Image 1 (spheres, rainbow, N blue to C red):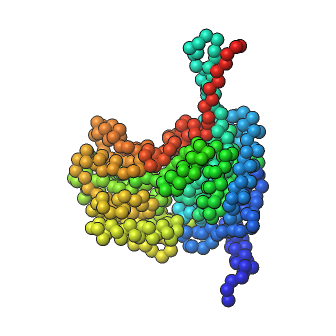
Image 2: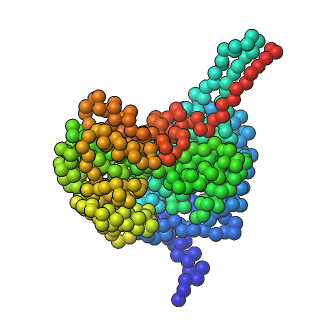
Length: 502
Ligand code: SIN
């Protein structure tokens, strides 16, 4: 018998009840959009399911909003702006720090929700939430240091002042791979700079963003200052945000293809745009590297979040003398990684986000092996959305895996001979987000770091993200920087005032 609507509703209701039992605070599981301080359903009341990628089971039904709700959120953000910007930076900082405290107090619940909807192991989910909270901490302080200038005039009687003002209403579109940290990395600087925000979280992982909104509300962040619009059609919401003249800034993290599209859509209203897009990170191991360190860094860089980060090592280049030993050790370490449901305590690698991602990785590996790559471990999709941690060698530039952002747990390794050769190969891509290399020759450390055309370079380290440092890319990897003292600039306008006659 086909399931009727009431059967489906009953199933989800029971499922919600079950899920809520696993949360200490059941009110963190929200299903509606958050507009002007109120939880609202879509009009008409359509919903879409959020799927646990480890089990392929639905976790929740979430409001499927589109143009109308996005327009309401824009109006709410615009209306909230004058009051929010009239407050002191200290006042805003105090609310932000309260938000951070509530996030940390609810770490277990937030981590559980994050793992349920995204799949990463609970330990990684907790680390991400702390990382996310650190952006709030950072920007609460940075917002209080938005200094201007007084410029010595070149004409008598004039006073030249430079002040900084909030850009205004911000549209923020965030990805599924870091459902908490990418939200706070955008929302915290925006709010600290006295902007108001409409957040569109990924349709794969809206629950974390909604829980963050609930906590922001509890922290006392005023109605309309942070709005969250969920929906399974990102195009409809994105277009409404980009076309609106009221939205003065768009901040997007996601694929380069979508980033280019949004950039074009923003052209008509000449919005400020920050884009954190795809990467094709080289991971270079020179002969004089500490082998164990290099293998450890490679494992962290490649397999964190099942290889689903924009800064994951994508192309390994290993110098010929160290190549056999590196390959052997990396293979051994990859083989030991425990794959499973992120909610299980020993899991080190969770599933991929969905079936499409699994198919992509399967095809990349198949293309590589058909063109001569050797599999040292892994190489296979498993039941559900899981893919074995995989090490491939003999990678060549004609393989798709060499030219594509992999976004999966596959290490693709090539050998190289000289420094000049590897720099040329590392830079031979349209991407320029992150690059890594291992080696101890101090002269080469500086030469290579300077020659790599990447926004971020890790030397003898495989994970480099911190709230204190500028995150972002060159070339087609993006525009602007997030985090650090630079991360607030994109939310500010510089105003020059010339005073005469006083
Ligand atoms: C990303 O993949 O976009 C973020 C990764 C990070 O901050 O480490």
